[in-house]
Image 1 (cartoon, rainbow, N blue to C red):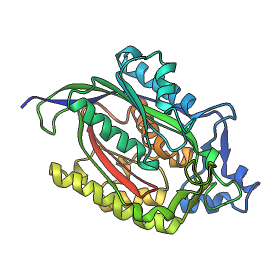
Image 2: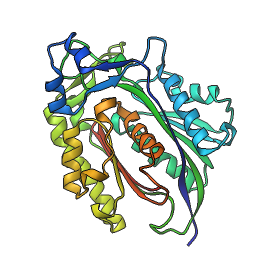
Image 3: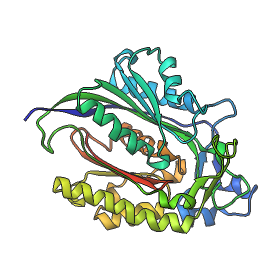
Length: 325
């Protein structure tokens, strides 16, 4: 049976030049490199310059992804930007990137699912492409989380960083089997009962301010390991696969302990896990495409391999996707 698949054709990324190490943060708040590394695995993070906006980061990642795919921007008829830190309340950051790329056709919009944003955006783009509603899409995760941090709160300011990653998806023929290239399965979930565990304490419709991030770390950790394993198990049940069949596991880069615990629950060996959290910190919706781009460009992820991605974010939101490269 011939069907349309969303085939991943290119990856790109961008990280701001400024690097903030744990030692740098120890001069600002009561913390140490040892404390941060032991609890999170993070050693450094990138922070956007004052004149760098989320759309700027996303644009550079998008341009890199298009170059990697060997495609012109005029071929793109859908842009979805996953971000919790848009340039403006409106218009959408995606439309800023669309204009900068010289595209004046198709659709461009933002999607907000916090750290799960890229998975949600990929699942959304897949629906457009697999139904023939679009032919080629840019899916971008871009964040300037440094703008919504309380830099006096040592429990949160050490965790996050800025950056952007992007992928190009193109609709192509498949046979409807697991041997097809492209997005093979997606699962996304939300549960708004846990809003107070991870949120920003501001907003245009409430406080009329941007606000800063607030988090109950232990509760987020507990839910993350359970929810992430659950959404991947749905993928395994749907496809008949197991952790042993996955070539590369590319999880959201929030905390090394969450990554290790989830991989262990799924039966995926550490040698098949892509980890960038030590150098990038938690870049929210940008973390998975940043990690995908790194593993693609250094040759770890090869054409035809099975790649599993997953993430959980504020809301709570969580989801996973299975891709044949």
